[in-house]
Image (cartoon, rainbow, N blue to C red; front, side, top):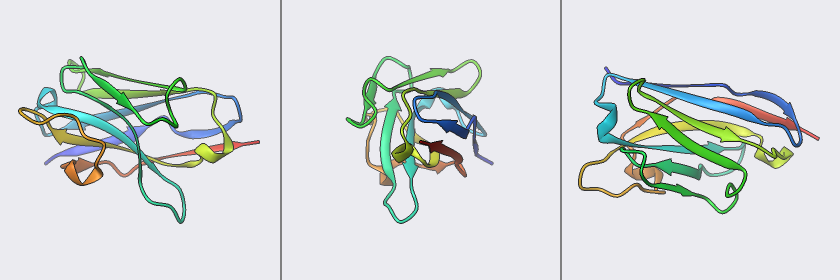
Amino acid sequence: QVQVVESGGGAVQAGGSLRLSCAASGLTFRDYHMGWFRQAPGKEREFLAVISRTGGTTDYADSMKGRSSVSRDNAKNTVFLQLSGLKPEDTALYYCAAQIGPFRPPSRDPKRYNYWGQGTQVTVSS
């Protein structure tokens, strides 16, 4: 059974930082690109960042460039999203997702992802 579990969310003040983690099990982690998304109340799910299965390629949404960094540790089946310069508009439920990788490029499209976590809440106060 595949499990994807996010952690590291919380409440921070504007300008603060958080490091989100996502642990995956029940799959061959190195075969999957790993993406981060978020969804705020009343809004659609938004792509944030993705890292290729080898870690050699990353892609960021414009809203997160310069304020985030995605990394992974394939030995520990874990992917990370470092967030900095947080703003109140970054408040959302943050999701990690796994996209099967071989012969497919990392995607920004949530429909291409095979497994999702339950999310971790990030709340930024002004």
